[in-house]
Image 1: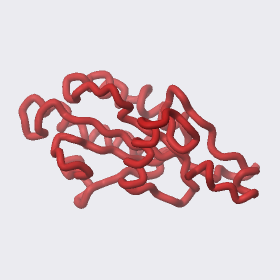
Image 2: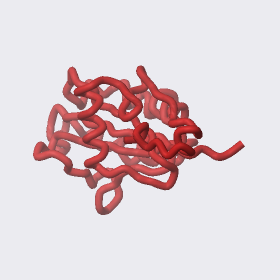
Image 3: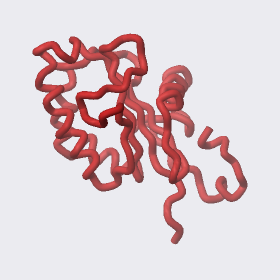
Image 4: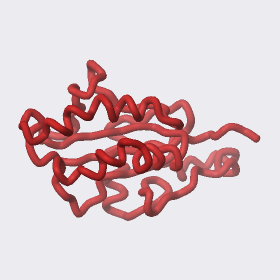
Amino acid sequence: MKSARYHLAQINVARTLYPLDNPLMKDFVERLDEVNALAENSRGFIWRLKADGGDASSYIRAFDDDRMLINMSVWESIETLKEYVYRSHHGKVYGARKQWFEPSDKSPLALWWIPVGELPDVEDGLSRLELLRDNGASPAAFTFKEPFQAPSEAAVFEGDRSLIM
């Protein structure tokens, strides 16, 4: 059996209720290094977006709004990402998100398949999130609730890159 030809990329964006230096955000900020280390040591983890400095106190600024946070990572599969998100200690932190983040009527998360060895950039992630929000789930951008399988070996052999955009 051949090894997987695709990995799963994800982007997650959210707006904090308060600036990160506000005492009401302290519990969240203090957990970031722990949660990021947990991700990096989880089965199936490939990569995560890091700002210069690489620690949790360095944030990527993809928006004019300093309270908008962005998270991107790459995983071996949907299953390994789900295991980290919902079944690890991250699940407890995720469950407390209403303490720190504004609710949104738009999906904060987009998933998509990328060829093994490639890494997404912020612009690609944001465009996938916009695609999902504007058009719903598709092979180009989807969610845990509406997942799509990685492109088939047949698509790879036929050179059909439309499935990965």
